[in-house]
Image (cartoon, rainbow over all chains, first blue to last red):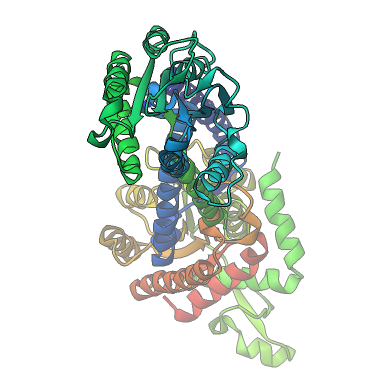
Length: 331
Length: 298
């Protein structure tokens, strides 16, 4: 807790002192004038010794002291409000400057895993605050399903629809439209390269990461190989988290691709997860989240937040009390 | 140049009808026990004359009561004892200045005395100083006395002290006199033994008539909007505390009991007293005072 305008209390002190001095001066002047016209009375102790008078005086004094206390409190509240009482908290700005691109391989073998990733992110969107998320689907070519956005309602809607399309047996696979325009299929390097290029605002300090789900089984002529795409990502400071369902013993025949993918992904300071079961996806995504959180706890930035609640309540209550005491004193 | 005395005469004239004036005269004469034995003449009886002075034989001859008049061989001394401190520059119960009521009362009695050829003197003062104006028997002298009272009594005068004036009288005068004491509500109380002692002592030597000028009621409505100060110390009496009806009732009760108590105290010593607080009350009040005093035959 501290005051934003430290000079405000000084100003208030000076003003209050001025007002009090003026009031005293006016009162002295008025009193001098009033004494000339006042009703002169002798032996007022006949009145002031009466119990009723003493009781009235005690009541009046109590009201007066009450009013003084309340006015002081309201004054303090006014000083606090006008000098802007702020609380100071530290804040990790990168936590909220996060951009995540989901980079999903939509070749036939990956559909189940994609559905799990999409479902997990659909649920995660609820907790997002400031993060941007985008979705790219690729096979032979990459299609931006939706660009990086903070419109979480839209994101949730899109992810829900895509999740339905991915997991429903009645799906028409319309989402793969545009992903087959290339030389072959599963052009992973091209896909990753495209995903890296989805980040805008490259000059600004943001945390950029890609969740790449693929088995790295390339069938065709790539423009960009995976290591080249990884280097491109590293150059743009994009972390790649790879999820590879193909890196299991039953698929030894593509182990070499898996090793390559692991190497590339780790070179971008990201993470590599091999798995066989789509139900492990949520924990992996949580892991990525946690890892990122940990890594992004950087320089804490001091944030001042206005705290007007207590002074405000005090001033409202105090004003009511001032009215009450004023009424008591006038009566 | 005799404005104050003129006011006294006017007041007497307004009140009276010759009857009252004659009554006052009669009561005044009866104040003095000692009469000369030198018979002067007879005159028609006026109510208020001492019944002992009626010449019953002459009355029987004429058919209407006649009373004897004697040549005064001795001039009586009437001494006005007035508090001219600040307290008397305050308001009386009627709203007049207490000083003006006191001057009127002193003037009426002084005028009666002067017309009877008696001498009137004044002891006036406050806590700081006492002024003595010697006994003389002329109207201009009476006017002078009244002026002294008028001039000395102001808000800038020293605090009131009737005790100081009474003590001055005790120290200074040997002869027996008629003391007219002009006091106010604060002068006599049971808890002020020193003053009671002094009054008792003076009563042993002098004839005393005690006139109390009633003090103002601070709780009155007409003062509610105005500032009010106690003249003794300049302390303000805040309006919100004066305008309470319960307080007003309590004050009225307290004043009544206090007035009764001080009258009772004086009565026990043997002094007749009368409380008055406006110019209208002065003449009938004095008449009642003299009447009560004479009937009590003190």
